[in-house]
Image 1 (tube, rainbow, N blue to C red):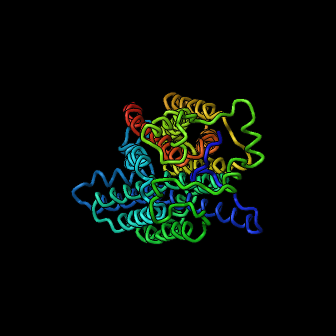
Image 2 (cartoon, rainbow, N blue to C red):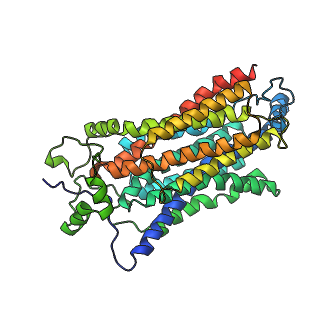
Image 3 (cartoon, rainbow, N blue to C red):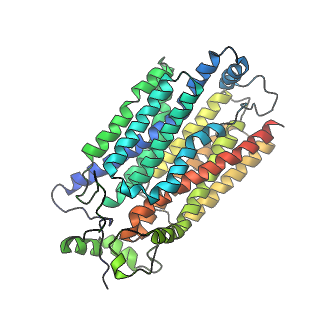
Length: 452
């Protein structure tokens, strides 16, 4: 029996004369949404550190903290460890930036469908703007931390919302979203560093970046061309309306490429739920959502493992991979590690139109190999030069970005129409869970090596 299509199905763009323009507008819109959504999250790590250092320097009751913060910028001269350790691991800042996102991604997919997309986007933009304002005008440590939390909330809610939003458009917008999120890391780091390098204070730099939440609103409300089925300002009706016979025919037939892929051996829908006909067009029940989550585990585990390994490297090992005789200082080496990692992420998240990788576990295992190799490199210090570490870090970013964009592409492709919107939101917890676990693991590793 033919299964009825739902409003969550991946729509086929109309083949009118403006079809190409519509496709490019939507791709560009998701690229900008990805860039804007992750921008505050990336910038807050550097900006909050600068603001906290300024506050510590002005606090005459805590000269030790101020000295430590300043020393780390050019090497901690008071540290007797051979690793030139920062007194506080960078994993501490990572946890402050990721835990709110993780909490949102764990619980929001079950209730977020009651909130229309237009309201979600407005809330994300407001939270991002509030984060820039709070950190910029902070007069106490708690204000800066609150600003970082606001940026995390904006990024977490935005990611699961925009991934769910892709199901209302052609599937190629996933490539735009992935490329934009990759570009946020490079653009955020370079723009913040560049503006402060030319003499602007961190406070003024953050105020200038208030243009980013505004650009998010422009991208969503003016650049995108959403279908009428998108719940913009009100919740979807309890009963999912049936689509027209012509729409159903297009959705069932799909493109020639998809028909060929679905006819190949081994291609099955990810969640073959045993549901009766009267549940094929209604909203998902709690039991069905649990079944979908069970089916998602084969995607979430590899993605979580990739991000666990790479953020264990980034926040637990990178600051310990120090080469004293290199022409770059310790702080400069660390910044280049982070920059090259973001470049790798940008390249691989932009590669979906060129190559698609179905074997996600292979990417996970390769990333684990990187983590083990660099862990031994930190312990036994056998790396001959920072140049080799630069290459490994770039490769690490390529693996992480490829795992992210391919995970959501194949979830979108292999999920039944009615389940796709929830599946995209629920699977977004994978990377955040891996990052949070990496931050917790990095603490004892940092303490162990700094005690040597």
